[in-house]
Length: 588
Image (cartoon, rainbow, N blue to C red; front, side, top):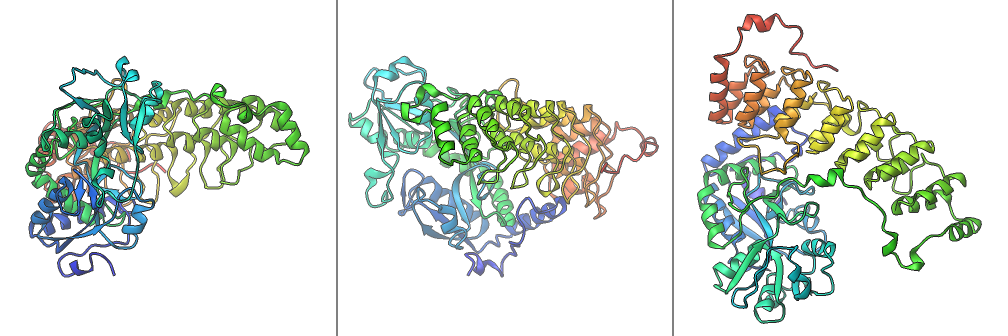
């Protein structure tokens, strides 16, 4: 039985389509229904999956801020909370909970987590260094040279270990091991690495921000906290945290978002009570004041080189070893896959000379070019094409090398493929063209590279007939989002570039929605201003007979409605607009 079966008399939640499968019109209808259900408090139960022992996040005694957040949202929606307790560090957590209908929501899921549908972010928090403030130790961050001479405690699966390893901080790092019994043995909970530091076992603890804030604010321990989210440009050190629901529970996502928008002040007070370090985030329900790192764009231009100096002698493949293996019957194509993994160009050339096929998929279905693109190896791509690889050949999964490169947001690989003749218009999976796919995946650096490579800015993609401008319009809100690094590409930058390149502004999707209507549905005044300044027609109607203002009003987006009305006053006359050629058609 579904975990929300007893809600059926209160609200109807259609679980047949994922968020991506819904049309813009269906999204609008579901948002409106969710708002009505929220206003009338018709959610009967809030089925929560929670960790029984991971303070200050959650505990079986309901003492964590996730538990308190659940209470705020349950009160707001009229629901009763039902818990399913399960340690969050278990493998296959979402499969063993959501797939088994044991719960409907899970708190503190990274925004955009691929296995779940996530709400807009609740808050953003960083990794931090925490140490006693009565020892005279003053640290500036991960690059402080004093760290190499201190003992540092970290949780076993913490991402901060990678950032420290890059800096040669390895041997002095001590682990708080991962276990499944934090509710029974509090000393095994991740936060306890801080207690071990307080007890003198370590000099410093490198931890997730909420752990440190709770120890300082609610446990009143004498600690200093140093955020380190600005210290690395390739290892993410700050995270937007959302509520996760099953991929088809779009109704519940919207209902919870209405509730969080209404109860934002209570959520903010809760986070501050628990001392959670909060990073600036304009799209979060709980804003912060710590400087944000923003988009990790340097990965897009990063070169990825093999490091043979880090390999042991038995791991190094020599020409003599390879020739011996081939004489013993080794498969040249399998050895080619191994050479691609190591980025060894000499081995690749040798193996092709021995009969390896540069267009043959490996056991995972990847062609050599797709594999190289997935690994962000543009020099290997260049070599493979010279050796006869087809830059447009899809792999066994239907993915072209260009699609693989854009999914990695790796500009050098994209440029190399385009230079070698990769088709920037060939439809891929679900009939999405490369530019549309890049934008749908929010790979803005890749999208810019594709536009520079000649991608059509108006052609529609997918069964819904979405143009690039429509896709971008759906990715903006009342504010642009969190702070971006200088030089990074933002959604509005892409929208402006599309307009400058001659994108069909009033193109309509299969259901008649335009980019302006989509911006109105998302209450995005900046996008509305950009589109109307470019000549978007607010009088165009979708298949439901609604204009952009109607869409804004249906979603109770007063800012969007007002923006359209005000900007319409300075718009050229309708007759002038009508004289323009087929502006409401989508180029196919």
